Figure 1 (cartoon, rainbow, N blue to C red):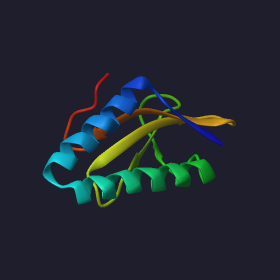
Figure 2: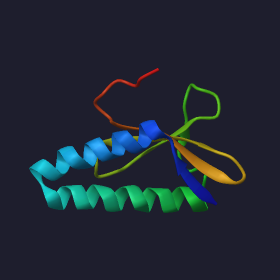
Figure 3: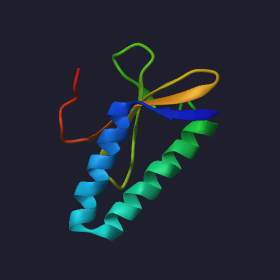
Length: 92
């Protein structure tokens, strides 16, 4: 199963990693590794995240890090839609 990131999600991930790297490069590497681990999990188990109120969109937390990944899964791919800090409100 392939993984595709929307431009929005890619920018959000990059911004989070850049912000964290300025404070702690080690923490940024840890977050990057956790993102990759969760993506591998989703490739094997696309329904691992919980359903949201938006049809077809699921959410999975990056446990140990306060971030959430919103995604859509179909038979061929995982589409990462958004990436955000859990303390921030969701964007429409």
